[in-house]
Length: 399
Image (cartoon, rainbow, N blue to C red; front, side):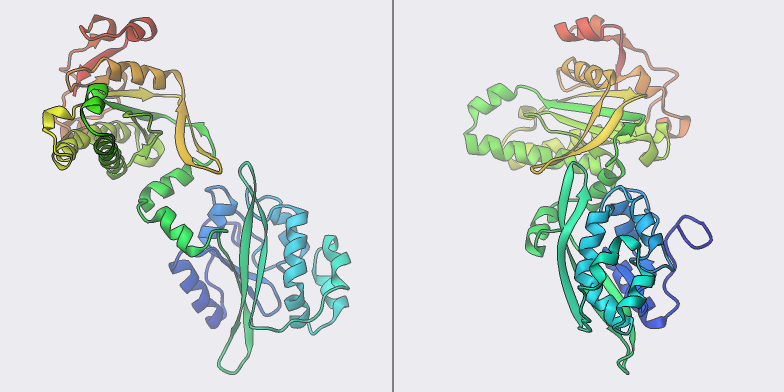
């Protein structure tokens, strides 16, 4: 929060040199804090604030000493990151030498500036007026703690005047590892995943798709060829979902799941439109997948089930081995039942989804919701036993 109590990005520091560094760090998407020569916090990048706020802009004690009472109190409000006394003590122990040097080497003056919780560490500090200092500590994360390497880089003018210090943390992995992890990731999807880092009830359109005749196809192709087909298929599916503004769910076998949130699409109508758009785009893309796999288009056929979830509980599950978006709710199971009934390369959408469309979005899709007719799942020739048991009355139509 800014000094006047307004939410939003923090303004650049008044000092021109610090402002130049802050602008560069902001424009390159770094986590960073900047303190002036007296260790007053003058800037924090939005990237760091979103991380510490678990997707929201965390409030830092701008204008106060980085290790002062106001800053320590603010840190306790962070959802992630340096949000405990222990973590802040470890940080002060490593960077306290810089603080002492910039305070004229006077331990008593440092004691007056920093939070009393740090006082017992002060007598052990030695002045350290160096160009850069590294620190490897811990930070609070969802489900535990993570390692946070950090660099303190001194900012000096041409005359040697110390303007301040940039504190630049980073994820624990080396840059080669980080680059490999995100090389094929779409930044748009990564940002959307951050928006659901905290699970909550979120209205959304649901897309289920599955490959028809997959068992016979797997027997017909070599294992390597079938693996390549599956990889091409999920890559095409994920891209269609991402391009339409959706969130990719888990892949189970040949199955594809995606969610289109009203809050990110802008409205329930826009989310419903995005869901149908993604299904249509994937139906077109799958022909290219077949050709690249030396198959005929009729060999690679998807069936689709599209549904609406008014009270889905959507969140991002992250473990040491994977990160995925998932949703809980009766409508998720119902969407799976709709998809299972869509044999013959059909795309079946529920009445609940179609009637979310306003006239503009329906027109863009070439649909007229007022003239559509529906069939209950139980009345479809292809209705499965599970559909008749779990969702017999759900009304669907072809889209």
